[in-house]
Image (cartoon, rainbow, N blue to C red; front, side, top):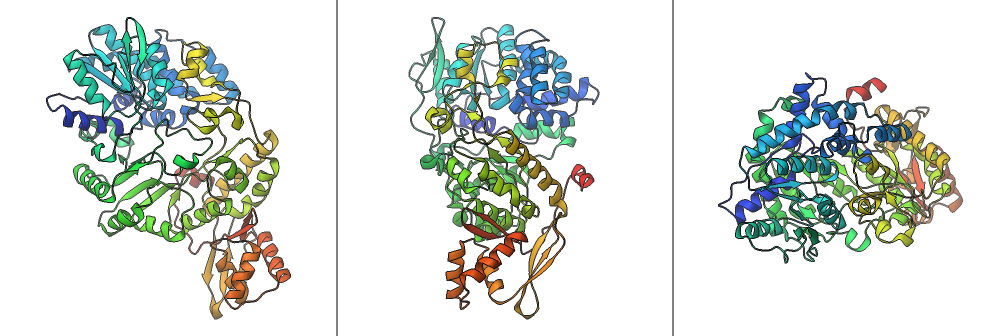
Amino acid sequence: MPWQLLELPSLAIGLLHQRVREARPADTVVEYHGCLDWAEHLLAVTDGALSPDDYTDIADNGLHHGLGDWIFAGSLYGDPTWRTAELHRYAESARVDIDRAVRMRPHVDGFIALAAKKILATDPQVVGFTTTFMQNVPSLALAKRLKHLRPDLLVVMGGANCDGPMGHALHRNHPFVDYAVRGEGEIVLPRLLDRIEAGTGVHDLPGVCWWHDGESVANEQAHTTVPPAMIPVPDFDSWQAQLSASPVREYVEPKLVLEGARGCWWGEKHQCTFCGLNGSFITFRSKSPEQLWHEIQTLMRRHRLLDLIMVDNILDMRYFHGLLPRLAASEWDLRIHYEVKSNLREDQVRQLAEARVAHVQPGIESLSSHALNLMDKGVSGTANVRLLRDCEDHQLTVSWNYLYGFPGECDDNYLAIIAQIPALVHLQPPGSATRIALERFSPYFEQPALGFPERTPAKLYDHVYDLPTAELMDLAYVFDTPPRGIGEEVERWLREAIETWGLAYPGSTLVAREGDDETLVVEDRRRGWPGTTHVLRDWQRAAYELLRRGCSADALGRKLAEDGWPVGAAQRDAWLAHCRAEGLVFFDAGTFVALATRHAAARAFPPAMEATR
């Protein structure tokens, strides 16, 4: 159901379809892509006034405000005006544009009726819903309608929204949901279908929620994870066929999704304090490079699409040796997205670029080593800046957000960074500066003593569900808590600095090139700077090149001496101070890193950015 992105197939449906086909070959499996049908419905009933672009805006930006769920909540609760006043009050306080959501809601009941008719026309015995983020209420609204029309139909729900206590709360509060599967579904779903067909009980199926004498029973979740070898090549044929025949097609650029790994190898031992995305299954498992290479080839040949989103939470470092060289040697004009850890070396960034990884999400989160230590990120602020510089050099698009609001941070951690942001405007800016949310499954949630002992279900749930607070405590994924860390004034300064960074980036470069007579010429063409050309000779050139990796002042002095450039501490420190004043280096926690790139990257911007530029 909505709000799956229109340009992407559902990985969950693709995987589970294939698993059921393998485990129960006599079954007939029919997919329903409600996201495409909903976008088509809006386009038709509004004569184009609500387009797939409007759908995408809700899918991209509505999550943190519950807009996608609110749109369908009126249908779930049988009230077209459901919590409308509450949403307007929320939108006013949060300064959120709800115009699209308000215009979409009147069309939901008609869509749900058509969706139910389409699904029941296939005469199903079991209907399964996969639910993540804002798919809960759309799924519940359709499930309720289906059970009303066909009481004998069995409804199963699973997905990330059913993990842990959330799945039990979802099940026990919605009697029209026959089963909820908590945890990974590749093993459990075929077994559940076996039991349904045989008419036997499910009391011993791990993670399954079921009804017994009118009471919801939640079986303990599995303690073992699905092995990578059991995760099949997903089946996206039905999605591609529907999209190809849909009027939505002209609005989107379709991409494929695939996973090489589940869990997080860093988080197994050092889970980031704010992150709950892995839920209860943080154990890292990955497919072999050979298996993943085979799957990539299979999908590319089957679907003739060359954009690939890898949904791994973190790149398996084995892939630098076993997968990326194969991708680099292929003749396909691929564009790949990967999530990576931010402490990559420059040669690893180059290898990603050569393997046609065009977009990375490195989890930078901050440029302050103190804040990063509070997050347990295992990386420094200067390492994050170095990655931004290296990605600029190798033309990798970087997506990242600046997070703040950690217990133990102070204003000075941010003021020192804010003062240096003008020197960074030639590097890719964060998409936003955001106070962290308290997420279920995160260390901050699981261990209140870390700084967030007070928590209530996030305010967004008030205009979505008709449930008491005690039930929302189990159903919710995001929680409100008194703010920690920096106050409003420093928060405003940080946001303003990052907004200025975003506006300055399109026209800013800071490039170091080889000059005459073995000099290094640094051409400064950053917005807000005077347009200086710096010429570095002898030990200063050697020092600036040593700072590409990043080091302290003392370490720089030792390395210069080892390379035959003995420089006194006073002379060295005076030069470093000059480099800081000219914005040629970034400094944090005793470490300096050079900011100049080796190349001026080619940049392409959407029309809105070009107009701003």
